[in-house]
Amino acid sequence: MGFNLGIVGLPNVGKSTLFNALTQTSKAQAANYPFCTIEPNVGVVEVPDERLYRIAELEKSKKITPTFIEFVDIAGLVKGASKGEGLGNQFLSHIREVDAIAMVLRCFENPDVVHVEGSVDPVRDADIIDIELIAKDLETVNKRLEKAEKTAKGGDKKAKEELEHLKIIKEILENLEPLRRHKDELPKEAWEFATKELFLLTTKPVMYIANIGEEDLPEGENNPHVRRVKERAEKEGAPVVVVCAEIEAQLAGLEDEERKELLEAYGLSEPGLNKVIREGYRLLNLITFFTAGEKETRAWTVVKGTKAPQAAGKIHSDMERGFIAAEVINYEDYVRAGSMTKAKEMGLVRLEGKDYEIQDGDIVYFRFNV
Image 1 (cartoon, helix red, strand yellow):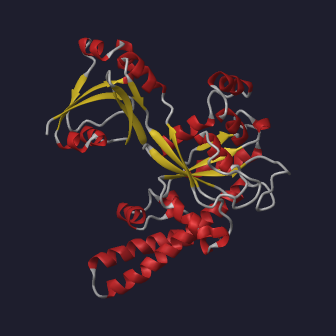
Image 2 (cartoon, rainbow, N blue to C red):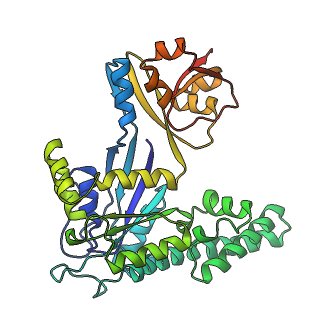
């Protein structure tokens, strides 16, 4: 699995329509009334990567295995969700399980589609979601703070350190600021405590998906709502993906040639799915490497900076344990050579040791012995 992305938003912003399009299914019910999604729908989607198929073609591989992304369609949040409004506690707990959040914001006007807040304002909607996540995090922090204060009084060193982390975290949250905006300011130990011990919701990286009407395609340049979303995102260094969920839903049901024609008609170079996945990878600092041969060509997802033995461990734990070396060639060099055999003849395949950091597009053969 590459990573999982939780799709969140207020009711009736096009969230479930987008999920259906992304997963090319009708698994997520989409309807014009709040709370039509209660249990989270999950869809697993192949990560589109032309490199994988080009490698398989050159290697004449019998099998092709892509890497995948999991989309989780989480029910629409409303004001008071952190206090249980609209089954909010249940919904918020689902967010805790995902790697990153895709916040779908309505940037289209349509009197026939009701908005739970009565008007279209994507920045207000984003604030509502953030406030609910903050409120839930404060609840978690206050419970832990109460416990830590009691333990610290007995002289427990770990509890005293925990107490300091909690005070810093609580101050940020009480200023109605999500913790993700303060990652670089927080002491490393406090950030790790917030993410790995408390699993706080506002530590999750966020991307914004601006859902526009088809009249604003291809990129919504003249849409004032999109401009405001981009201004907000820029302040916190978050990516923005502009899509039209309705058109994405149409694209999902078409054959390749028809899909291409519809994309061209709207001035689009690719489906929104590709942009969402690409930005998701950047958001989580992920890269793709490949293993290739006659039997199978396969894509693997790792965090940028992963060393060769740990990358081998993604394939099998024995390969990490018995790692000797990695034979590596970058995709561009490989395509230039035309095959792994020719690449070796041209001296393009390098032998790398245990300190080598896997790069995006590397094609790797791991040597190991157990």
